[in-house]
Length: 107
Image (cartoon, rainbow, N blue to C red; front, top):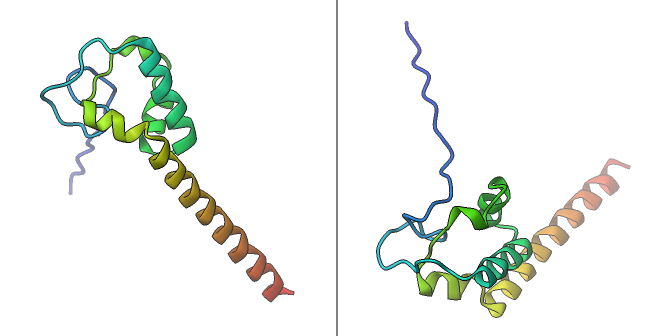
């Protein structure tokens, strides 16, 4: 029996597809550096798959990422970020509650 090893490369940031939805077409070209900063700040707060993409790329700004106007507007929306932060907080609290309950039951 032979085993075939397939290397699946992690998708890198690029300017050919949207950073947020990975689709092509009608992308913002040459975004401003301030916009990159806004994306980084939002990603730091959101702690989602986009933040992981950005963290894995040591020079995010230099890679000339692109996006759709609607995608970036949604991603950096303060309301959407707050919702995400609340969801993360609830998950964290549930995790703490579960672990303390398990610790109490063990005693």
